[in-house]
Length: 451
Image 1 (cartoon, rainbow, N blue to C red):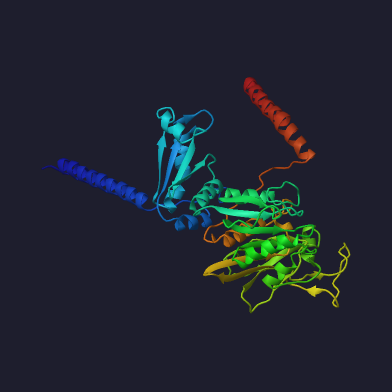
Image 2 (cartoon, rainbow, N blue to C red):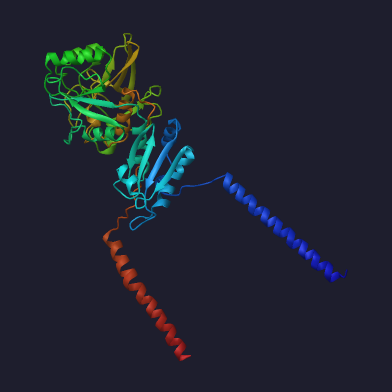
């Protein structure tokens, strides 16, 4: 065999080894790409990444989740609806492998579409625990709220006392709790109002009763009905503003509450150009389910100090402390308010307590907050007020294992330009640069022509 033939065989062998190594490398890369994933969310506020709360909720849902997506392949407005739904559900599948989905084309199966009550192209039907929820908006908050509604076992009826000028659970006035009521409905609660002048008793199927700042005295018969409800083990959320109790003093005595006069003043509020009566939460009890791992700032406007006697039937937890450098102002509240050592109570001030006891082998839960303003339509959006309020309701309804998930704040991407900057862009990009390019081109053409 001559040297040229040997060289050809050697080159063929080298090429063959190279091809084998390349194929092995491609197979190895395919294996690692299938077994291991690395992703990084570069969007503002990590909006394409599931929150830790969502992952925890999915881990708590025992059993499979089945989703049926009624969508055509293409949509004039949204494009490929199948891909859109797949991209939305893939992160949830990674967190919960037994979450499955299937597509149904409404044009090919109109009977099934009509039977499912589908109203929009791309609508999802989520099935869990033999219950269903419909979803149209593809976002994390809407999806998780739907799962929370499905996860609740049985109806959770939240009743709010009315008839005495209380804050309405479905009201639209600034002092009402209507926006908070909408949050509860979105998370699977049913809200209703209760007038004890008409009703014989607080309904036995009520998960809890809300008393939110009556403005006139309750009748003795109404107070007795509330007393019987509490004595029988009913759960209660009482929002007490810095004003008279309007006939509810017996209820305060039953709960062992200690209610002093005055309004909490927080000098830290002045840093945000707010009234000194806007008390900012300083700390929460980390051991109680309502405030475990709760680190959001919350605001308690025009709050009073709330304490409770310990050592009786009730187990008392001081939930929220505000105004570490403030005080309880017992004098006149104005812009020149100052601390009076002789009469005022120095901070930090507790403004919420949780009470718990056992009644007939059943846990009874009560939360008392020193203001109804923090859940009102005016102040609900401040800090973590929504989250704290929903946590309170979840605990009172024995659903503390469910989370509260609020919309992620959107980073402000709006660009504000002054008039000078606007003129610069107008004349610079629309006039100066085009003329410069045209002049440069003309100069080059002229020089080449003369050359």
